Image (tube, rainbow, N blue to C red; front, side):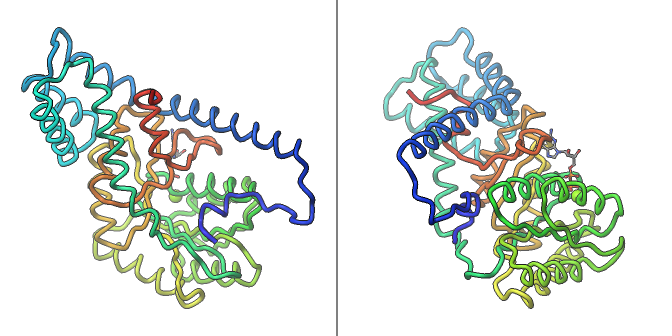
Length: 344
Ligand SMILES: Nc1nc2c(ncn2[C@@H]2O[C@H](COP(=O)(O)OP(=O)(O)O)[C@@H](O)[C@H]2O)c(=O)[nH]1
Ligand SMILES: [Mg+2]
């Protein structure tokens, strides 16, 4: 079973499906998609506004895309936190196009940028197909969630658990961030709200031991998904690496191929800092997916473009608010549409 299948509602296969029912389900899903687009657009409003007002200023009073306009565009991309490497890539591509076509009108710039960004996102997500999410029947899918303190790990786990239980899945959560009692309590509130089971030990206990207990209990109770929260406050890279390795090893004693996914949560509003965190965590452990949070409160949403380009790790989810429904499966087409408007 693939990970995204987990979101499909469990249906009773004995119930014959009538045509009218199917139709209303189809209508429902169309509405949901429209609604999703609106919510995404709303969540990315600050990034969109910041980016386009800078872009408008960069081309004001100029008709052709020349070296000056490209310099300004470079600055717009960098100050939108797309990151230097990715910005250089985009600018180079546009220069190649100008060299080929001899001329580019500034009014075309929007459409061309949209193309370039869509293309970049396409490339960095092509690895998603071989993500290897097939798990053995009867064993829960285990996701370990990592990231610095305050990035949004606990909130993301809570939202995800809620969405999964709503889709009929049995979810177990491991409170392996044992450094602060408040962190365990915060997770407990989310778990209860989501209707998930949380496994905990007292504050200060060994995170690996909590992870072990959680997996044992999840297997014994036929859980579908296990989400493991971890602590982000570790003094150095070696400490981080050791801690995460220890948790991973102990999990694989219960389920040999666990964790099936290691999701790094990054706070999108920190811009360049998020790149640095991605660098450190990818060096400390094998990260297989990303969630970028707090995109609602920032004009720095360009990080999503740069990080997915530079780290070649698929962005799974984005957080666009504190609410339980404000964790969205990341869809690169919808993301580009939300920033640039829908493709004609
Ligand atoms: N606006 C907004 N706030 C978020 C989002 N995700 C998390 N937060 C907030 O960020 C803060 C830290 O989140 P938390 O889950 O405790 O981070 P952790 O330390 O990584 O577990 C909390 O106040 C959350 O409500 C998001 O997508 N949007
Ligand atoms: Mg936490």
